[in-house]
Image (cartoon, rainbow, N blue to C red; front, side, top):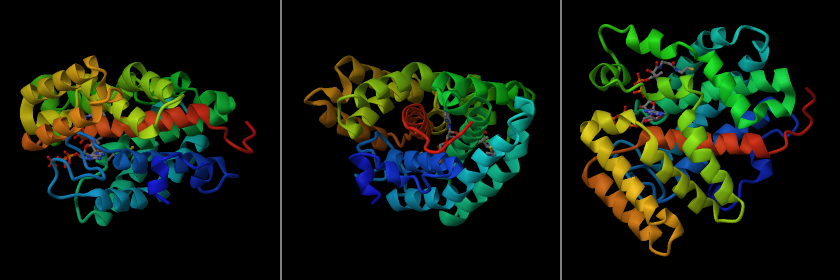
Length: 306
Ligand SMILES: CC(C)(COP(=O)(O)OP(=O)(O)OC[C@H]1O[C@@H](n2cnc3c(N)ncnc32)[C@H](O[C@H]2O[C@H](COP(=O)(O)OP(=O)(O)OP(=O)(O)O)[C@@H](O)[C@H]2O)[C@@H]1O)[C@@H](O)C(=O)NCCC(=O)NCCS
Ligand SMILES: Nc1ncnc2[nH]cnc12
């Protein structure tokens, strides 16, 4: 069943077609599985290898996504329940569930961080989707409107959680102080600008008449070319980020995976990222989010009455 996602997402994959909460949460779960199944992804876990990771593999990610899945419903419901509350109050209201979801992930992975950043992003997007659906109906799930809601919900996040931190505790806080990188917090506060500007137009256009795996791989290259991924910097510093972005850009200049030699070049990129022990985990997360936003824009949500 899971491998069948690679060919074409089944409309029925998303559990309960009659319940918009379960349906939307099912799309997020589908996005997380599809991301890890997409192959070959440079430095990342996929069906070919575990990338630059000794502590996790494909089944770790599938188990992790399974542990996270029940919580995805909560995030959508929380967005619906607080639809008429001020946007900036929602993140604090879903954070306890996000932390509990993170614990469920760690239990399923024996303490390995597979999806910590993904949980943060997905929780925010799904709560935003719940709010938009309640306030504006299906029209509210258009990516610009959805990302506008995300930005409204997270306004001031970088100032509150990065600029004002004196002693850094997390990788993100340390990298902000060292290099001014805002990581996932900057991405959500911008309303997923990297996804909107560099990824979603590519995915939507390539899915019109091309193979799904190729569309996802080309989209990942665009993300790696532009995303300031703190995972890369925490392992290899700013030079590693420049190497990753420049390598992705030069691949895209030659046509990326759309050319006859494209997949061979991508496998070579994968080998080089593994040799350098680099993993663009943040770009992998944004790939899943790009897929989710594409699905929310294009799929019909059955039986939903605004
Ligand atoms: C809110 C937090 C998640 C913030 O965490 P942190 O302070 O560390 O902030 P960031 O450095 O910004 O990154 C956190 C994770 O977000 C992903 N990420 C990084 N850069 C970007 C970006 N530019 N755009 C989007 N996403 C980004 C990335 O997550 C993915 O990679 C992780 C797996 O890779 P790996 O290399 O294995 O990571 P490690 O195990 O950490 O390194 P190694 O030891 O292996 O070398 C995985 O998480 C992916 O999702 C970043 O890692 C968090 O601090 C927080 O506050 N949590 C509290 C609870 C909470 O708020 N939960 C959500 C409730 S709504
Ligand atoms: N496929 C993947 N490999 C490594 N880290 C990731 N973070 C999210 N998806 C990932």
